[in-house]
Length: 262
Image (cartoon, rainbow, N blue to C red; front, side, top):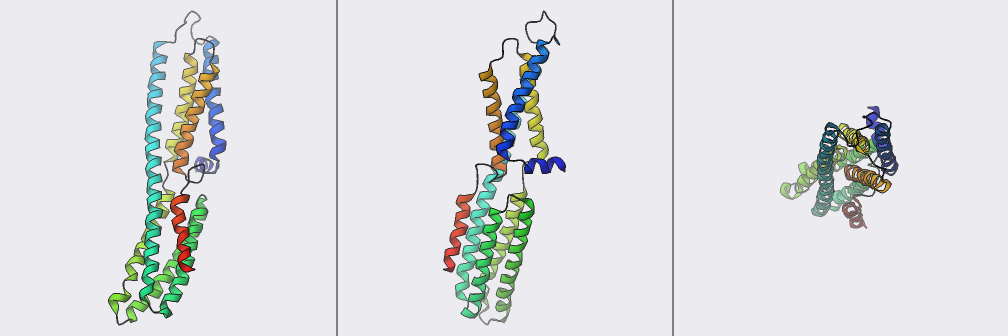
């Protein structure tokens, strides 16, 4: 639980340079152990088993990076599509209030405006897990009021078919809000992320341990930096708005819904 909180709370702009430095450090530790004579002094080539382990580990690291990237990218696409679907559902529900008389349409539109504002706040505060539930519950209270107004009128109205047109749209709107909450909370498992860190550091260590010549700082720094940036991209996709990647463009469609109330 502590490790999970730590991973969620640390900024990616802090984590990335720290990981880069740790990779360089582990490489230097591996190179230093080899230089001190852990291997036989007359051995000028890395041992076959060490080279094989290092190659295997790098292959596993590449596989884990690809697997993690695929998971993060899939979740990002799901979140983006859900925002679009929710915007369309809310927009449809708002349009269908036009078939109601003004005595019902006016309070419905007031509640819908509050609902849209709460969903926009849900997006902007969604980085914080506690804030996610707070704004979700706030929007749920508003959607319950919308449902009560619409369903009460539908039961009393003589034109049942016309009055009931709004109810399926409200149901879809509520269902998508629940799905969006689940998609926001769905992340690449922390155990995979920590395993990725461990494997990256072990790979850097073994690469340093295999080094038999003078350390090439450009190669070491380049490897460490590119590996760290790859991990940064994976975490950025997995946690939108925690780095450079966000969902501002699809969420802008939600903001534009407020224009319907002007």
